[in-house]
Length: 504
Image (tube, rainbow, N blue to C red; front, side):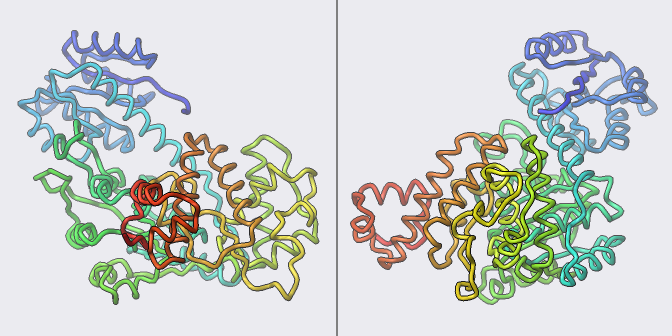
């Protein structure tokens, strides 16, 4: 989980300090308590906590409310530090108003100790995740590429470096759109502030609004505490919205409002929050076509499309394949703690002749597969996956090398159908290679329930293909697949394929 600093508890009420200190010790969470704001400010000169839990109403300070002054000082010095505000329930609204948008959560007194611990754990997880993102950003390699098409991208990033203008990045899946967004952030005046990414396609539609804008306590069933959305988390920084073309219509309207007047409301909230956020959007879809078809708001399209940055697919920059391959082999070897593999010249010639429909991500997955599976230190042509060997000029038509979209999408039931490619069937060995690659990737990244996620993906793909083949006739599709009609109906519901090709 990463190195953890102590949690700081600040309250002038000795009993609150005592109960939280004992509870956190029982949960093996290191903590430090403070009875007054002066001591906290002194400690902050030298160090900072993992999470700050503080009462908002404490005597002292220049305004008579030292708690509020502490929180404002903390927010200024450590904008990414999660702060949990404790406050009397009757006083909650004024506390929220006085410290709007800055707190991670509110904990109304009297509180349930288990709820407090759960809240602190969530705040700890978020701060560790943020730290990992920051570290990632620090160590993010500059985007690799020497091809002329990539030089245009680098020049555009340079030109946009001092600007806050909204950018729309277009490019096929796996071409590196998030890397470009990170580079735009890293070279901007907002570089020291948060970079927050959200994949619109990977989140179920009914959760997306809360994910973007946050929600108030009690806004819907299960909303037991207030939650900050991605817009608040990205305050003063950059918000990257990937696969923007998949955003539902009603959320497009809300996003347009934020981009127009800079204000938004949490779900269930009545106080407008100000958003000082630079938005970078990305899509692999043709937004103009979506606008023509009435699926994407034209005014939002124009608002996002201030600067268009097209990222070339890998097949348009084959001269970059050797450079990228070496880099990915080094990276995989480092992750797995082994010596980096090298690619023999003949094998490299095969790789540079491939169309890579999955783009840079597919090449990265392949390098990870080679690091795990290739028997010798030098990778020869015979060590490449079967469908990549012996490419001749006759068979140079694009292979349907379908390395799946992303491990995180593979896990998302709502996206399992959407992630299926509509291409011509691949050679039989190819899907096995793709499956092997994604399984290795998911296992290496510590994902759980890998079998379930991959089985859902497999079943959704096969059933959708059969339904397309039979024109949506379920009974005929079930017969062709060799499964019962009740089974196919149940699977269609379980996998969320009702709205797809399925007809009764």
